[in-house]
Length: 105
Image (cartoon, rainbow, N blue to C red):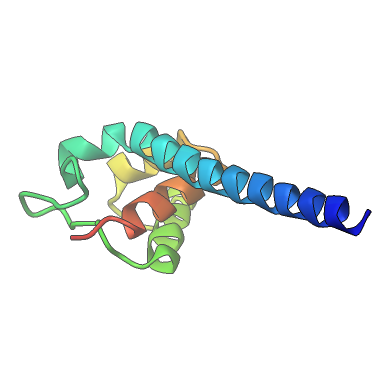
């Protein structure tokens, strides 16, 4: 009985670990998909080739604060970013912020 309980616990732990890993992979895939429109200004990997700020490797807290400020229309003169940010849900903005924060600049 004890051995089967131990095996069941091990199986459950392995299942949870696999689920967590697949959740991380899914979030990264979603981030890459959602980031498509960002590439034209910020570069395909978040490293801008021009005067637009690079966003790769920026802290999550900084990115999400900026994205939320754009969405709320709180940044004067940021017409393009305000329009883009308003096209995403709050959850999608969180995924984007995580995605770009995890990219090495």
